[in-house]
Length: 139
Image: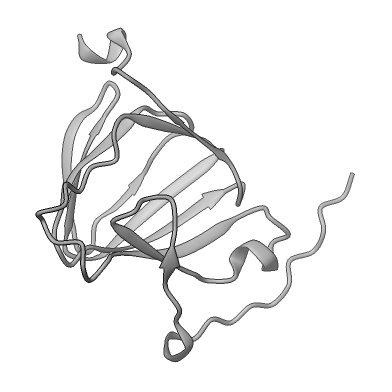
């Protein structure tokens, strides 16, 4: 079976549109990679909503993504996560992290100016909410 060819795509900052997405305190700018790669990848810029002050708790709850690849590059601000078997990390502007497929994690907090580039595959995948960190990860 052959993979469909990727199409040329250009996405300009002057035309940026941010829309609601997976998290209610964040907004997402789709970069057109989903359509250009026939669903193989998605890339978007994620930022905190202007009206999402720290009065609103910036946490996602424990979850895992059923995807093959997920990379995040922090463009602005900071964000704190806890990862299964890895512990807590705070990522700042210029930091990049790769979340292995299916790793359990939780966003614990972020700055009021957080902005990130996220790339993952496939473009559409399931996110599974969890009640607790796996036992092996807490030891």
